Length: 265
Image 1 (spheres, rainbow, N blue to C red):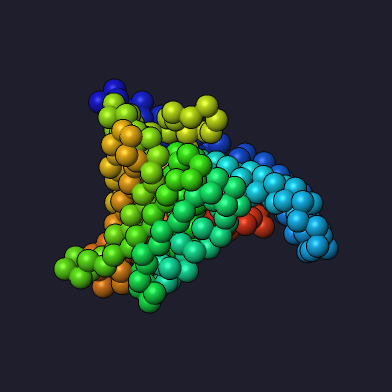
Image 2 (cartoon, rainbow, N blue to C red):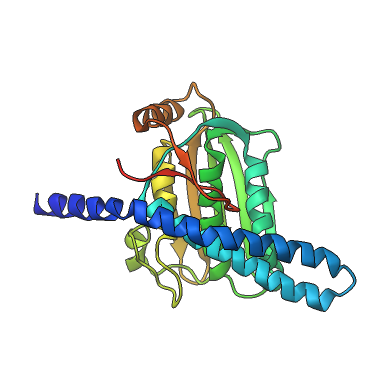
């Protein structure tokens, strides 16, 4: 009982910060958007100077990295409000890989994709992109230069669902950490907020899906997501109910990944 009361108190305090965090993030994103726009235009002007283009790429990647951190803060202090629609899973994953292409190329990572072309899922695309960016970035950071990142999607016709596997060839997660990786602020890295995987878990949960991890030291880690395909599935119905219960959603800021959230319950 004491544990439940403490958890509720922590959640209430975090949510009370939602309005403050939303304003701060909005104020940061305004100049951040200008920096991204100007550097993108500058990159086009430096069409024949690859060395200077690489410097600009550093800036663009830095901007996107900051924006991802801001999105994680928003999703942590507020309740996601999914706006569900049918989207091609291949398109969503490819957009996320494009966002991280600079890091992938820099570290000479081989990306293996096995994604059905016309497979559609019912989800909030903006929120799902945040999920995949966090998971892909987590995997990329675990891989040494020259490693392999695998993204595989399969349809489960029996369960009317889809399974997404994101696997890396990194060093793996120690067994004693596996049960804690979705906890807020837990991280084994020298840098980072420890919020990325918590956000992943929360967004997948409001979509009526599940996320789990398999890892072996020295062999790598696989994140496994299960989601419903169409509105007729039980998972999708549950997600729609959550959306209606939430009473809609708000979108704030001109971000690159996007964020659907609201402050308060």
